[in-house]
Structure formats: C-alpha cells, structure tokens
Image (cartoon, rainbow, N blue to C red; front, side, top):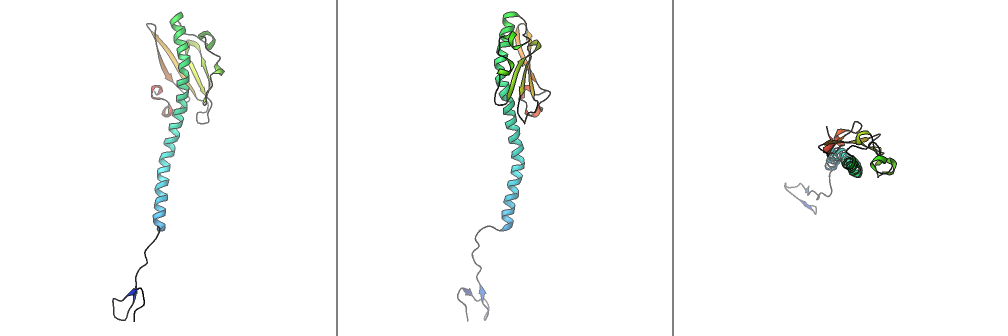
Amino acid sequence: MQVQGTKSFLPGRAVRKPQDQNGFTLIELMMVVFIMGILAAIAIPVYLGFTTRAKVGEGLSMGSALQRDVVLHHTMLGDFPSSNVEAGASAPDSYRGKYVNRMEIGPGGKITISYDDPALPGGTLELTPRSVDREVSWTCSSTTISPSVLPRTCRP
C-alpha cells in the first residue's frame, strides 16, 4: 500500500519526499551578521579619520586668506607682521568656519588656526612663514592635533 506523495524503495515501506527548503538557516544568518560586524569595525574608524582630516582641511583652506595678507605685508615692507591689524586683516575672532574658531597672526607672521570641534579638542594648526631672497614659503605644524589626521603637507 502506498501513501500519496511517497515513493516506495523497499517493498512494504513508504519513504516521504523531503519538502523544498525555503529561507535561510540560522547559521547562514549568523555568518552574515558576523561578516557585517567585521566590515563595520574596519569601516567606521576609517570614516571617522577621513571626516576629521576634512575638518582640519577647512582651517588650512581658510588660512590661505591670512597667508596672502602676510605675504603682501612682507612684499611691501620687507618684514612679517606680528598681528592681524598690522597685516591689514580682520580681527582673529571674525575668522569662523564650521570647525574653525579663530585665526590669528602672531610674531614673525605665524598664523595660528584654532579649532572648535569635539574631534579636535583644543586643536591648533600653525602656519609659519619663511623668507629666502624675499620669496615666502610656509611650513605647517601642530603639537595638539594627531599627525594621522593632519594634511600631508603638515605631517612631520
């Protein structure tokens, strides 16, 4: 005797056909979650470093306006200004960006860019001019910002 949906391989015995399987097994789902976790563990720190570098880059690009003022002062008078006023620039607090708090010209024409962002607590970037044969070149440095997030031109 045979039951419908079964096939007999041995006389007198019925074997049921396996049902088609739908969906994923638990182990397959766990493997997907595990792989996504590893990818996230790698991608999130890389992304945070990228965004912090972009924040530092904002100050560097904003600093080019003060660099121009310092170079102009040096070209006209032969020395570097020691303040924003002497360079003919706006007050230090007037230079504000999304991440930049202020930019100030100090002795020797050094430009100090201060950041106001939780990713850069107390961070400052310094642009220091140097003159050789009345040609001005700039060095960039920071003692308060991690070298890993500084632009390439500022890394030690």
